[in-house]
Amino acid sequence: MAANAESQPRVIWARSVDRHKQRLRWKRFGLWYCAPVLLLLVPMAVFAGPWEALGAFILLGGFGLLVACWIFFKNLGQRVNPEVRSDGITLFWARRRVPLAEVQRYSTFMSSVEGAPAFVGGDSAAQIRHSVEIGVVRFALPDGKEVEFKWPELPEAELDTLRAALDSLLPGRWRQVKGWYDPQS
Image (cartoon, rainbow, N blue to C red; front, side, top):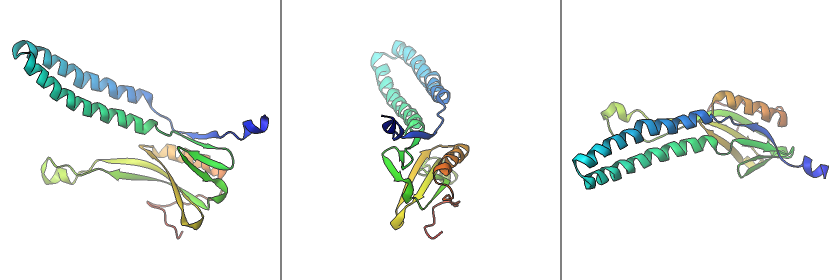
């Protein structure tokens, strides 16, 4: 029974999730969007009529649903797959598994993903793109295979703690890279 308990993967690193900041996003949405919409719809229903208020409710409710989905998925992206586990033989993250013995080298770095350019606001706005910082761990395996673990909006300090946790399992195999992994290095 003791051998079975030892083979269970243990958490070697866990991402810290700022639940207060996530609750604050929802609170701001209620305060700065839902409350003004309700304050607008009540007088509209009284002075313009219920059908006009219903039309405005549908229009503003559709936009509010888009904003609520943005908040939901931003919060979800920060909470999803927050742990890296290991049983001493394999690394586990989400549905991915990396055999520790096969890792030739690994690197940790920050990357970013850029969104589409803005269509409103002229030429200067078209050059501004929203980007999301991503913490990446890339493992080089035999036969040129690579496995990546990625976390959106992961602070660089947390990426350093992840590297320290991986160094205890993979001593001497970390390689520093700028940007994408170079298979020749």
